Length: 224
Image (tube, rainbow, N blue to C red):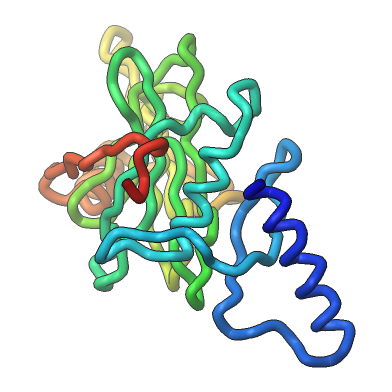
């Protein structure tokens, strides 16, 4: 029934736009998962939300709850709200169960009243590396290529969660080898750096090391 209502509303909106009337301002964009990558579909907000939570996020959560169990994106089972960049607007964080614990797997931000999928940190049960870490200073650290020696640092810049720097620790205490690299952005070229520079950058992104304990709640219970 829910999908039928959404489909009908989309048809109605298409007719309005064709007549030159445009779409009403309250219509927002949500992520629906019809293929391996999410597609954007215009639907009006109908989901009820709790005080302090965002209607745009309600649509994204509802889309996850509608996914079949065998869908590629159905691994998210929990949600939490947290203001990562301390701008008084919370981000939507989705979590998956890994090794009997809940860890961050996706991030949404609000942009012009719309829930926008920013990044995913997906691991399978056999993947190496540590879980993604959210620091109180607004940095998310993930372990690129599931290797504990490759650190990827993300921060929200102008409403977008961006990969800022990748640090690589290929040092070998056993063979007395110092081998550290840095690259910036998605297409950054690795360049060798000294151990002192590696430690400085790591400290800069991780701050005093304080992490965030997220208040995870089951997706299926959203709005109850």
